[in-house]
Length: 228
Length: 360
Picture 1 (cartoon, chains in turn brown, orange):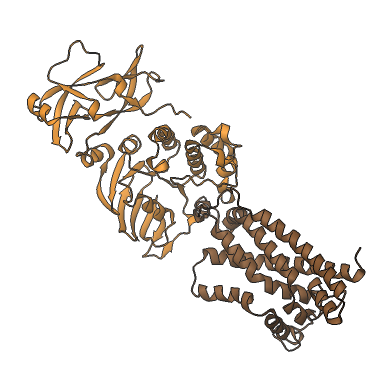
Picture 2: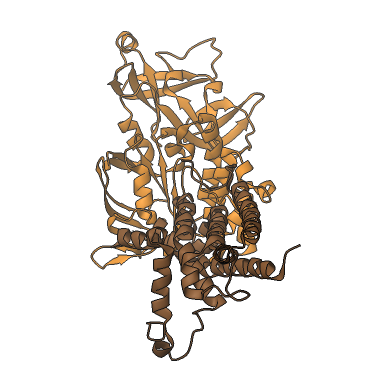
């Protein structure tokens, strides 16, 4: 039904989105929890920095990552002693998508934790559970639904990522070319039929994903969630 | 003698500053006061739930908070059995998992677990989802959860803030059982004088964050509530006789008939009697259906807004007091004055047994 190049692009798209989601999960959930619960000096600055990738053009983010991982960059081969294999690789595409997805996941995770009654966390601690244990056995399970929604949003954002990915990972068919990059490529070379087919495929993928998220996040009575 | 509680806490709040000092070795201290007087804030400050709490808190010689020594134990090291008004059961766990919530930090023996489940009568609830429990059941599960965690101090907030008096009266016997099942001292918040009289040895009365009165439970409440229309007498004694429809209870020299209910001979029982259910007579009444006509001596007479409260000494040796509320006209006409011998008359059915048989 699809040609090999299209299947490659689809596979790479899913690999990048999944890899970015896995990469972003722990730091974004941790950041979301800290923003929801902790009071610390400079919190508003951290909030702004976390939101920054939402507003910055993805190409700007891509360029910063390129500079970071370049030979003389802070995380480049010369600084860390070996080649991290980021530039123009699948790994690079994953990292670029992760950075762009991070604010979306962290902000949604924050909302998910803010909906958990903090008194339940206090009760857990009063019963002897450490703060870390309380996070694992009370906060996390009670925020579960919102957190899965947050990760799905991050996954969706990574599927559509273009600007940062093209700069960090290039547009190499079979290696780093995702559906978004393949559509751009087809338009550049004037293959409008193929571009349209890819747009259709991407639309179906996005539709299924969004429909699943909406279904998942649909309001339904849930335990332990504070009433607004 | 119970572990000593030594507290001196200050907590700035928007409406007033909570400032409470309390030293006590009582088994159960009632914290009594109107809504918004700082009762719950005091409990939360002791539990460590309020960040701004300052001062010193010592339970049984262990320091939880001390500004001078820069000690401020985190919540999970305070070893407090807090049962808030809304019980705060973990909604994602069933009842049994809730009861085992403390097990990350310390292991209770199966024996202790079983004993707490039996004490609070929740064996049939263990597999239930907590969201399907009734208010009273939730409260009992929360009490059992606190009991199993073997706290150094219980903090019990009044269940459901007096929404449903029937429900509260059903919880009360379980609280009595909790008190009997543990040696840890209890701070019990309530604005129901009857509950406080049944459960507590000592009372502090809070008003706008400050201690307004303190002393033995019954005497303190009697003094605090002197201007209220109705005072709920709480008397305690042992069942000495079971008749056809009534039981006789010896409350320390005086015998009182109460509705028989499900009482057992020889058992200890507490019951309440509203002061406005008590009639006063100058001579022993004849041909009266009321089962109780007790000789008593007037101890004090105090006029309030709606009626006059007369405190009567039922048995001089044990100083059992009973309050009656009568009209000012009656006081004048009968010449009711301190020292006067009278008869307190009331029906056995006016006495409401408060313990000992808890029911679901």
